[in-house]
Image 1 (cartoon, rainbow over the protein chains, first blue to last red):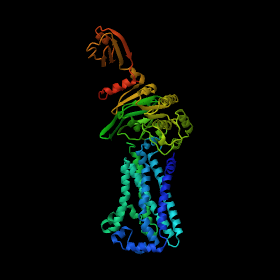
Image 2 (cartoon, one colour; image 1 turned 180 degrees about the vertical axis):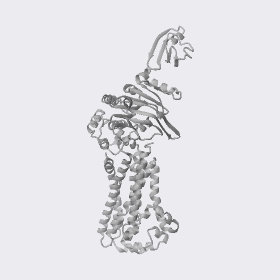
Image 3 (tube, rainbow over the protein chains, first blue to last red; image 1 turned 90 degrees about the vertical axis):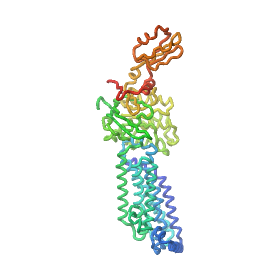
Image 4 (cartoon, rainbow over the protein chains, first blue to last red; image 1 turned 180 degrees about the horizontal axis):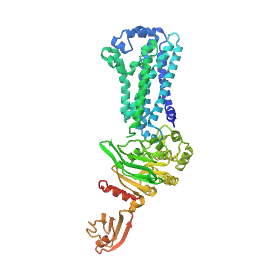
Length: 268
Length: 311
């Protein structure tokens, strides 16, 4: 029956999602509460200024003036790398779509029920997309509450909200690509390793392309991190083109996973 | 659906690599009729589970096709699975969930209200569904698997080694459940290593070896046809070479005053070959299914040779 797998996936996944929310919410809040006076930002800007340009670029750009602001601090000290942490959850969730159950031998029994394989992939992915969204939203609320607790520092609440929401499309890409790898590759360990490589590799490409633009600019678009553009979003707001592209990639990966899982042998 | 054939395969073939070896289930042609209990026999790695996975569309054939309940196993797999109950040989479920939760979840996915029959099955199998899966023993997991396979009263039950790990009392209950299912018009396809169980409950059996179906016959004719087990007790020591080389005598063994053999023909040539030896006793037995089974695995059949009982 339609919706049964979706509901059961939410039921089985909410507790883990809650733990992640608590952990990520604490990090998001601590980063904000850490700045309780402007002198911290000055020290941070001075530290950044002393860095060689190569390292400075790796930390999110050469705009020292912006980095010395509360928003700039959040963009470079939180939003530029926090995706790596969130991505761990998304990869784990992606493995839960098919790979973990297949590896445990559960799919043998489950796929004897009257349900289409693509339907299982779709309902599970949607359920994890809901959980991922919940983690982002609650983390955002905790961070906004922390921002409200230090009104004198001068964070721009709207930009903080947008920067949090900006993480969601990338997380959906990681979720869908991990799900696709699990659906395509029969060995869970291989699928997991490739998913981790996808995330870490994308991060490395983005970081090193920022530091060595002449050498690596051509491959930068291959990294989904380059579409997060944390500093730009904090400065100017969400970038619709990037969001559309990331959501498009997530949908394509989901459809490919549904297509492939419908066609291959299960549990061999 | 010819003669109400609930399962029918037509040259079903599947090749894949299992470890370093290439396994091939080749050109499988079998049928199971409505209301019968069909036993699918074979040693480990002979292709029983592969056949079952092909029937359920968990894996796809390289050649041939199968129909279940008159529907194509691939094109109509969802419609088939709505009418089939399946117990895998190695049942794995979510360790953190209770048996009761899994039963309810499966019922929801099936869109069926089968909780009352599931509760009845649990009571008959002495199964406590309130515990977490991780705490169940092998036998209890098997019981849960049986409940999940049977709770929606499917037209066809496909059971892979259903009594593995069950104690003798529960095996007795299982036999009763199979008989009741048959009486209710359900069809059962079960694979098993327990030949005594197959002999007790199955109407027909298929014997598989190395991915090839060697025989498909009624259990009764399988055990009656072909040979008898003969044990002769002589008054004196068995003379050297007695009965050796006779074409109808196989698996000849002698010990002191006893001679035992498989007789594939009439008695008269044997009695004549006794050369006047004084025979105290002759014991003649129909072979058990196990003895028949072992015969199949001790002899390599000629290529393409398969025994299928005429209807």
